[in-house]
Length: 207
Image 1 (cartoon, helix red, strand yellow):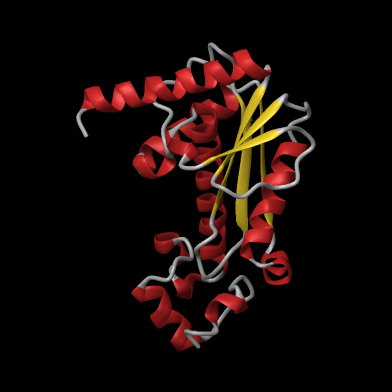
Image 2 (cartoon, one colour):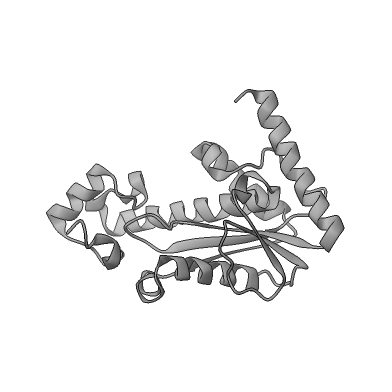
């Protein structure tokens, strides 16, 4: 994709949010990170951006380099009107299943904003229970700047958490793969067995 196409798409994301604010009032973007890995908590974030937030380059976290996500992480927190990052534990993933745990993390993120938005824009096609009206937005992190901001906060916060877990359980290589089922991770699992942050229900076919 050319730079011009990227700039046009990012402007369209800002325009999308502007239209939603005109229709509803204060909006927040909501997204999660970490549904797929074999280990670790699932994270979510909720972000309320002002009309003139001044954050340049908001985009789907998957389209940004790790360096760019890391640079945007503190900027979003500094310039957002409100934000909250939340998680659901491995135990909650096992008890509720991963979808239920992701919905719980999203609910916690919105409830932790300190203000109730008029509308929550939730990435995907499944809706958590929230204290405000919501709309689900398929591919929302590439549609709404607010959801993109939430996707960056959730992704980077989870990456930071997995770096801490790497220090506790260095044999698994969590710093490199963040808990996803890479060949190196699978080999470490077979050599050492699971550790306390592995998700047992995700390992049944492997082990």
